[in-house]
Image 1 (cartoon, helix red, strand yellow):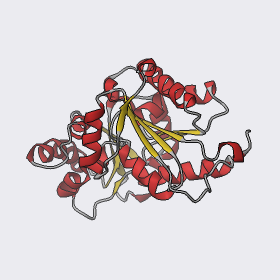
Image 2 (cartoon, rainbow, N blue to C red):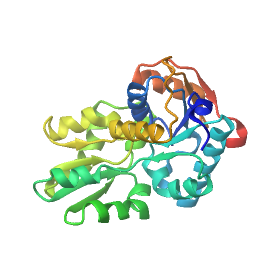
Image 3 (cartoon, rainbow, N blue to C red):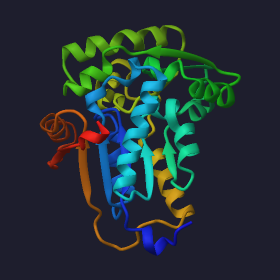
Length: 273
């Protein structure tokens, strides 16, 4: 392990298929304000949920190589589909780099349910993955876990539509199905979905448990940085860079409208697109 004094100021790579990971990025910046962050939105290859595991793994490897070129000290993957498809391969290929993956909040949901039924809202790519199904068997063996793909939800967020009649209608159908089957806890298994939380709440009510993973993910990242002695303790405010394999202007507009942040966005170098 390289000494912390040599690497603690190096950036953390944060990677998602599009703008969904911005919800987690906000939690990371709040908990770790001194860390330098590089966020890559692989928007040029959306949607991941409809791609093969091999393709998603190839993209994860390409983005990882970019982060390595930027001397990243750790790589955070707040993308359920990419984590499920690629995290084992990444850790095997790059054992010297801490990788922090994300997983749906199955364990706390299983503890909270009173009906014995929980609903998981996610992309098809996440729901059919071996990693996800191992998680369900491990953390909720005595719970009925209803898996519900949500076609169109990611597209809504990527187009900047997070409220209005169209959103309400598209969100209502899978929610109604899960609740009709007695699910009393919902798990958001995609980082895009918290952007739709207002519409979800409009349907299920303010008191219905809806679990997301932004803050727990940030806490796990903090734990791993501390464990590896690479926390940035300079006291200076961390920097933020945004990159995309898609259209930079589009990501900049979405970042502004979704998070009310004005940050310059650059195109990911062609070699990693």
